[in-house]
Image 1 (cartoon, each protein chain N blue to C red):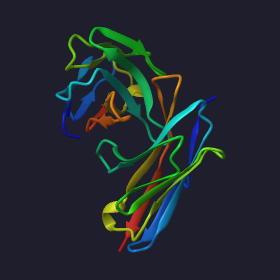
Image 2: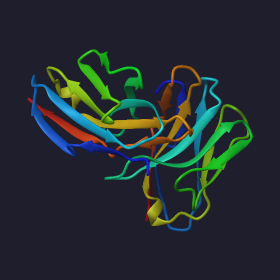
Image 3: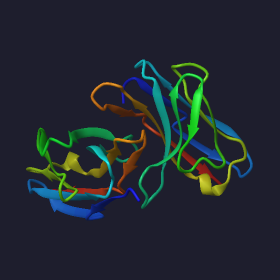
Length: 112
Length: 112
């Protein structure tokens, strides 16, 4: 069964600190993996997208990594800001379907 | 979420009432999706439309109907709302280029 699991479920950090969010998937055949940021009360917004051949992708202070062999991805946030407080969702696509498989998200709270 | 308009943003219904959620796009995309988001669960696909005039069931279609009369609009209808349909609903567009997906801002529906 195609699944996406994220950890931790929630995370609290202090402003300025770094953090890493994890995503493990069992989707096959793999097509691509996205990380989304969802602010409270808003729709998810894309941060990064990686295909099978890519193992890292950056977007400002956000850096995503992908290990297609172990089927793991991580999202690293550098020098966190209060505005980083949000849910971060990992989404994986299989190449044999139009469907997206969503993780349940990691809720990040950044405190001053 | 520019280019994708969802209405209404909030709605409270009594059990048994009906309503239609609207999604309109000006991005000229073919594929449009309706998802629901519930606490502790990943976004789940209700229905999708690969092109004007075509619709297909997703993971959780029961209790919903959809309509794609033109390329621009994709509506989701609840004929007889139930408390289990209390959720946040998102419209999603798929771009055929570079794996792009764009979410609408969401509709928060409460059925009492």
